[in-house]
Length: 168
Image (spheres, rainbow, N blue to C red):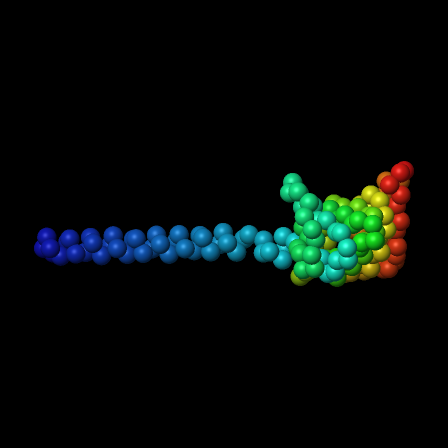
């Protein structure tokens, strides 16, 4: 092989190596992107309806007015004013209806829609809550807990109401 052929061959090898590195880099980026949880998996559910003054507190963020369609994270707080209320539908189909002057913490929520495994812990600090359980409560009732300041309720039914005083 002559000198010119060697240079062309080296250039082609380097170019192919660059394309290969690009393909590997793109493949790694795609793998990293697909391993991230989707937006649906990062949320526990959505606010279905709001009446009056309803605040949603997410993690370290400050309170914001809740609106129908807002995402609810696996750890969120819903707070209602007097003459206000809201309903939240979780990914497993559980419906939470929060009454006036209430404070509800979604302390834990996880649900795998493929296996229908999951669990949730809801804490009613004050006010009223009506809960209609979804798939988690129907398939794994032991994985659903409702806490108040004076009791922890294990779920055995599918539709119930809890009331909690702000004073224990």
